[in-house]
Length: 281
Image (cartoon, rainbow, N blue to C red; front, top):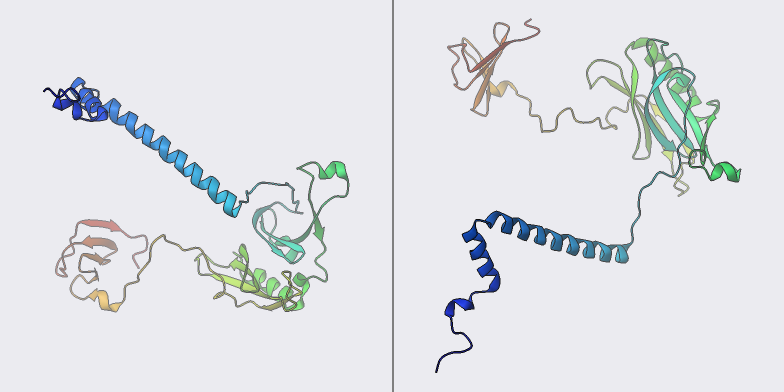
């Protein structure tokens, strides 16, 4: 008796496989692969959305949004540098435009503001006017401490290139960093101690400590990789001495030229790359 359920053994091949064979045979393999990838991407996106919705239901979410905008006006033309919150104050730091005026006092670089919400309902309903910054007189504040005023004035008096580069709060300390030279390490950092002894999130007292907080502040790295400095251990002496870098690259700076070699050869000054240095002394 003939098998009426499966008269042709080739019909046992899945329907999708038959479509694949037919598509390949007709030269439509690219369209088939593209359609399958699109379908898989849609399924993955739907599964991801389902998982994300479950996460939001379980843990909730907070979205960042701008609730208000305000403006700060300074007496002189300046470039805004940094801002931090210190208790009820907002400490705003900037650099006076050097072509117009050289900073001569604390107010030329630092200002204190309070963030207030207007009582007028019409103003409060406007995003532009919902909050306002009220400038605070520095007299009697933590920026008016005698030791800080003296150190600040001496800094701008003796270092002509002084400029504010960062304001930050770290480990219960308020740090004000100033660039005093051309190198990134030429900095002077003023330290203020923040007293949280009462157990409140706001400091009860801000006391000036000193101007030696260079170790407390973290400057942004100059490179996006770990920099390893060479020492005398990598120095290879000879007629053309050079630095041995991992027994792979040899760097020579003799005769006012920088030469890159791939051979550990101190008898010849030739290499695969050579260029003149800016300062040959």
